[in-house]
Length: 167
Image (cartoon, rainbow, N blue to C red; front, side, top):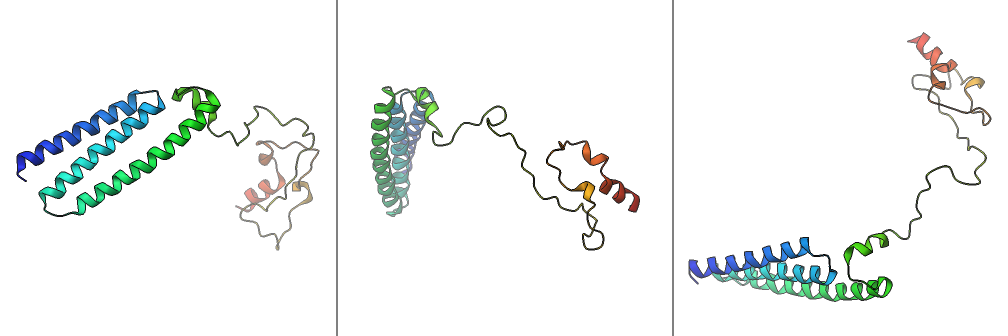
């Protein structure tokens, strides 16, 4: 196989890949998107076969058969997905299927949970730099479920002032 034949086959494979890529990115129908993906895989297979023939070995042809096998499996799985999603929405438009993603997870509420009247209390760790064995945490720093906590409370905490005096 001479250079001009290889160049023609590579050009054909590149054109097929480009047509498939443009089709995949511009189409909204899921069927046309899968056909575009198959066109891209065909372009890759032609390039693999051209390189294989040019270098006089069969590795590219074997890899091309594997690519076509994967494309056939992908087409079968895609057809099953299209049929099941079409039964659910009765349309092949990809935009209509956006709401089907992550249907298992509940949506996060905007505010607090309804029916959650009490605040959960968690144990407090001693601040960095204090060894709880040398000096235990003062009782004023223990968690109090009736007292609301905020980001400004740590400035007036006796532990923070004690750490500042030591430092």
